[in-house]
Length: 243
Image (cartoon, rainbow, N blue to C red; front, side, top):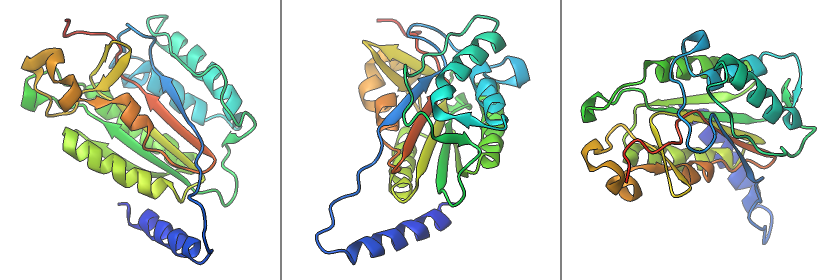
């Protein structure tokens, strides 16, 4: 699925080698959007059959035009409306470059996206999230329409997540724009947010977060595009395990 991206990356790397003493390419800082504020729970199913935050993103991507600087306000307002006030999206105060066009895509711009979703927790005895799987399909379609080449990764364990994120990091280095949409069960402890993989040992509760969960900070470090990097996290930010 990554083959065409990897080919582009290799071409870019070969070209870079032809420039003597070339410095490593810099990439844009990653903007992180959360579906909910700290301490809140996200809804798995709402308007459209999925997370209201996902529905808000999809509606935003259907607009005829949208600058990056307008994305935070659009997602915050639509998430509030679609959740009937039950979810308050936590978005960047400012999104730069503000004038960059999210919709429509600029001609010739290379856009890559990873849809990283965990919905099936049956192997660890936790409640599964049918809305999250539905959202993976909806988000992938919406991003394709916005000019992104997509990889959808469902129900991965922690090791598979790390491998997928490492691949995306390499692929995104050749891109102008990189985006990750991710969701699943989530936990926030001491200011750190964690995505719960499909193999997380639920009985160990918070004790296994450091070694068996996926920090959102690690996900946010994966995009490495030159112009714009975005991470949109649809999961919860409460602490259901306690302690």
